[in-house]
Length: 96
Image (tube, rainbow, N blue to C red; front, side, top):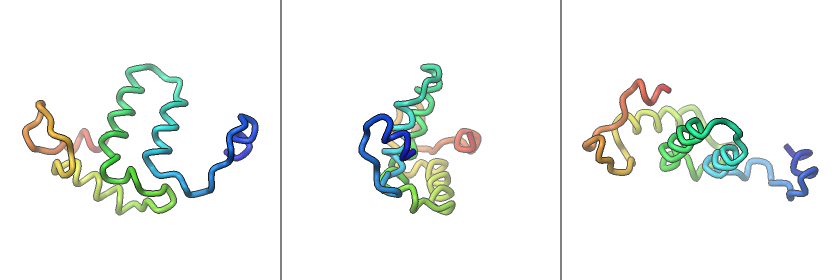
């Protein structure tokens, strides 16, 4: 990663300084896959951002992810949707 940044002329980032959301968005910006896949990934980023978006990558633990998954199932901290009335996501959706 450091070598790639140096080759591109980008100033190196301090290790561990990236938040989950900043890293995920930068990864998506560099993703060369299909537009449909990009849209899906952006939806995942948007769904996880309220839970771990501001957390530095080096501080994310398995328990943080497990709590985020349970909250997604319960509908906690999710934006209102016309498709679902106050309920969370199906377990099968969260698993994917």
